[in-house]
Length: 190
Picture 1 (cartoon, rainbow, N blue to C red):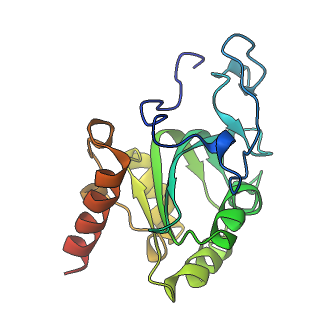
Picture 2: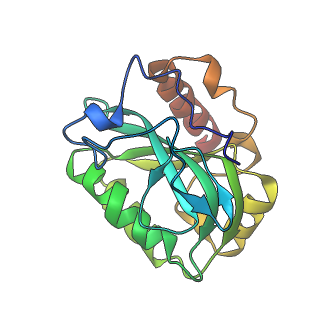
């Protein structure tokens, strides 16, 4: 797992540790010292710790003018034991909403499993952004993770499913990815 690093090819456009509005502003990273683990597996030091033992993330891009953020995830999303959604809201999402972000693209290729609980934090997140035409989209989550999220009714708040999988997002610049995601969303809503 230590070889799986967050996507880095958008660093010419955005670096969260340089963004004064980012929850990760001034965070320091090492390429050589591996300090975080998921269970007994060391993970790449570029992933951001968010006060969860099993869920890490990387804010890949934020555009405050257009109000969108792209966040990549790594690990196990565990709402049942660790209440990861509460932690994610407090550490990452709420500061972004306060800064004007209302469109969230969540990249889940490296989420290995999801353990759900109740959907109240997701419902609250959705309610907080829907009046400003905001949305939450799950891109490239594994089918078994999407199935588990659906069992916990998260599809009422997050756009997810087969239409949002197999997206070749790494091949486009972040501005185009946002446009591509919105077009996909509007196509699915029609």
